[in-house]
Image 1 (spheres, one colour):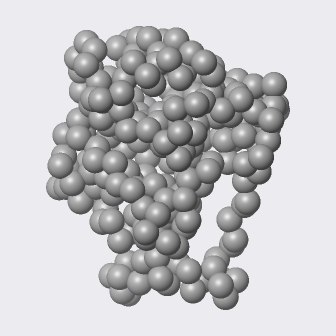
Image 2 (cartoon, rainbow, N blue to C red; image 1 turned 45 degrees about the vertical axis):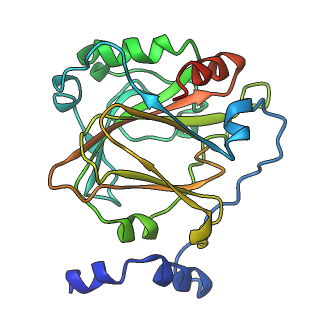
Length: 242
């Protein structure tokens, strides 16, 4: 039965579930706010594929030894919060503790990954929630089923910059991809960012539908960090262009 359910998980059945009201409709982000938006992300249509990380080598122990947790709704995808709204290793929304996405503080995991912390600081831009993703292999079909938008700016005042996400891939696998789409069910709007080890990318994950695909045989690890759009972030992106 579970095998049949997995086969049925594709973007076409997803669209049917949405149209029939079986699946909860997604929230509609307000993309016309007064938040400052980074020029290079806007010029890229909501994403920028950067060059691979070329800084000091990051030991595998900095992501493998962290304390991971998960959402009850998804027992297959685990996260190791490096910063969180509460400073604890837990998956909790910033609004649940009366904070913004950018008002996160280091968790005990932060002390275990000094090179990753140095990379975050090296951007020169303000960051908020930071977490390591640990994910079992999946297919592009499954990824398209799970395409989603992040709700990063719900409590972000428009005196701040618009919050985007930065990806930093750690797993070395030629099959890994980050799928981004401007229209959820329009494959013509899809772009696939290859995620070889060290690959960096910036995505307006509230504007774009996105999801990761990794059909390799081993576990995938990647860093996902929320950053405030700012001139400093734009400068860092410029410095990291291929």
